[in-house]
Length: 302
Image (cartoon, rainbow, N blue to C red):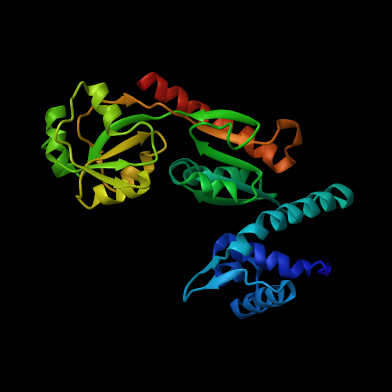
């Protein structure tokens, strides 16, 4: 069997940045390079490996199957090298931390708190990626994952972060027309297919049969909120994670004071607490501290 020499470290760093950002231009900005230089480095790596790692599009790039399979081992190797270097020769100026999170949690919880974390830990570069489906979390390296639902499929250790409380939201002119739960059925109801707790669960909580309900299926709460913001129907808020998203879309409760507890929770998942790198331990402590008041407030309100 022919042995392939280990690729240049520069090639691997460029590949990792381009794969994570899905853009040669964004990778170039992050690495302080030009976009053509990034493209040349990626092409050199592909030539060295004898495989195409990206599918090129006019304004973005997408990993091929080979690229997707290669990325986790590259990220793991870069993190291991960074950690070893910092441990042996003094802490690096910046340590990278890779966190994956479901869209709604990343946008509704992490984004508003992002500058708080970076202010407290200026020596940690937080690399945040998002996903929605199980497959989004299965094929990429991360120190920590923030998932919704059963955590055991993603890691051996986990911490409960937040639950959710569901209530109907819509544009103000639609919300004003909703006087009773039955009035909800006059509008399309935006349903997220991936959640166990959706409109049928809310109907049970409101003691509403739901006969004749018209559902418009979407793949995420973020998309449901965007459509509701355009007047396409009524969405379900999933407080507190969805609060900034609903506010940004101008959505208001349809039945103020009416809410139903959800069935699942957000969890922080990791291999084992004792094996976490220093940046991951710092993020875990910070996140548990920031989400505890949100969860306590949610439980009290429910």
